[in-house]
Amino acid sequence: MSNKHLGHTARKRFGQNFLHDEYIIDKIVSAIGPKHDDNIVEIGPGLGALTEPVAELVDSFTVIELDRDLAARLRSHPFIRDKLTVVEQDALKFDFSQLRQSQKKIRVFGNLPYNISTPLMFHLFKYCEHIQDMHFMLQHEVVQRLCAKSGSKLYGRLSVMAQYYCSAVPVVMVPPSAFKPAPKVDSAVVRLSPRSLPQYAVSSVASLQTIVTAAFNQRRKTIRNSLKNLLSEVQIVALDIDPDSRAEQITIAQFAKLANASHKASQAPSHEPSHKVAQEISSHDPRHSD
Image (cartoon, rainbow, N blue to C red):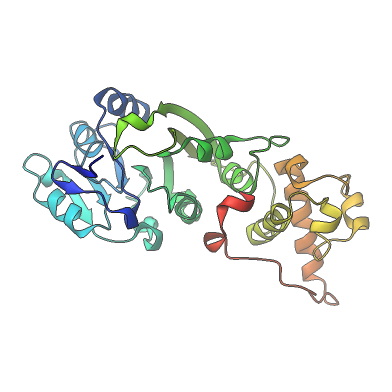
């Protein structure tokens, strides 16, 4: 099967799969629900499958595109170029706070490249205070993990951190046939709505990330073992949490308690961390513990 669509060859290094099914496109645009004066940002517009119908509904919006050829096509688009501000940059390195317009938060959407979807979402979570909502096309399994609850095999680091920052709801299912070239997996669109107030009291988000990463890095072990470099069994029991539980059995509220206890212990003058467990979230391989 050809990887060329509308004169552009899909680049594997950018994870490009171009949406072309008009019925699916209409469903996605309806789910986003853009209004004419919204502060809209699209990540990875590609050949404009979503860009064009959204442009018909809004006064102007920003698109972030890393592929220089696609960025050039958008700048010279015969119908919508005057509505677009094209930012030719890697979204993983972009400061999204600069797009907020006074009291008007940004609304973000995009067909995210499969190879950067998880680190990109973690990057965006840092800007939640500036974001009204996000609609992303992702692998269906990633959407399932985003929305998974404790007790599920799909529940992991991504579930906990995403739901700490946002409410997550799947809104559109997308079959492989809707793309060119067709991917080997089903896709889905998820709506992420940042919480105006934290649902769980956390003293340090960094501590939460550390606890969650440590627990799911060794998800087959009990938290007595996976968290032993961060909290003792006595400290875990004091939180009314069973130390024989595994990571997938721990609710987000319980992870928040564990993080607060770990953060408090780390602030004690006599405490010296014996092992560096924290890892950079964006560099962690999501296949193993998300």
